[in-house]
Image 1 (tube, rainbow, N blue to C red):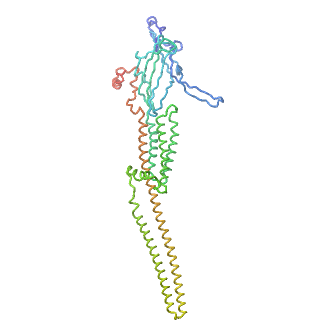
Image 2 (cartoon, rainbow, N blue to C red):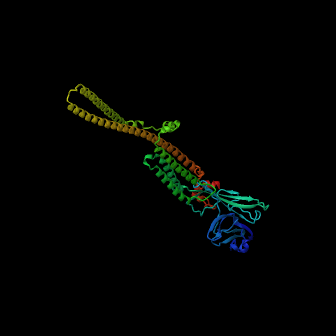
Image 3 (cartoon, rainbow, N blue to C red):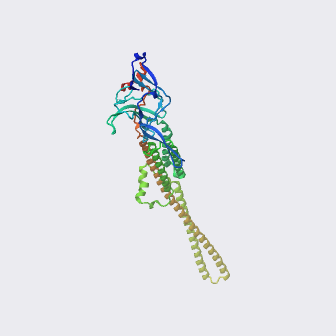
Length: 473
């Protein structure tokens, strides 16, 4: 509403008529414009195959949509009231640095484009003060399912521009809104935290199962699919990375590192060259020092129980068997040689005996000697086989000890990575989510019932409900 000295009359001179209704297009209206209005512009390519629609900030563009042409009410004292149903489309620059825990400040700046403050003096409809903490009327406001209002202010500015010496006046209405984060917590943050937890639990899976790398890659694929779905929800901008985007990048790095470290752990687990080839300090650190720090004990006693006892017993049996065979062969050989010598002496001393009987004895002796040679050869072959079996048992034991060393090192690395990743995941999640200032904001949303230009008269319930707002007002 405004005052127009051209519409001043004496009601008594016109039959007591103190107000009239006139079509708004037949009277003078101040050129009040919305400075930060929104307009959609279009750019077409040269071949007219692509059209780009975008919204720009159009300075001092007072275009607004009036749905119904209403008349202006003029009083006898020159007061003009014109309340057409209109829609202003304003531009609001959104800061998504803490998305989805962001707080936005949107302003609507109204002022005249051609009249300075001496010709058109803009003041608030309720009070002639520069700042009103409750400068919005929320009588017809419908609550939003995504945003909640924290503060509504109205400020009157007086500015002097370089073009003119006069003062120009504008009324700026500021609306502070906060995004309701419940939807984003349940549907975005909780699944992302779940993925990061799974990336940590990969190190609890034993390497012998051969499914660690499969689980890690499955987690990475799930995160990438989830990331593609989030692109549609996160506001696109290149000015700043939103809080949720930073947490997603943190989770992506965490999952990739878990895959890399899982590959390293599996490589260590299946190594078979001796651990004594490692530097002494590294061997002591991985097998001696680090397990103590991580409260891990190597199961040494288990490796020296029944299995080692059976191996030792079997090896001693082979050795005794070998010795027995060798001793028996040597004994048979000595008996054979003694028999030959004694028979030879007997044959020399008894020259007068029958030649035919002596020949038969020697034939029998030679056949017995050849039989002992065959037995000796078989015993030596058997002894060689026993040596080979004993050597294989010894090598298998050494290889088993080497494999156990590498498995224990891989187990230590898994425990170390589990602790590190759990700590980094918890700290990173807390740092990422606790950065948002809205978490520490204890200010309650405004009660639209208390933001009225014309509060109800003698309403005790309203007064009790809005006593704080009334004191501020």
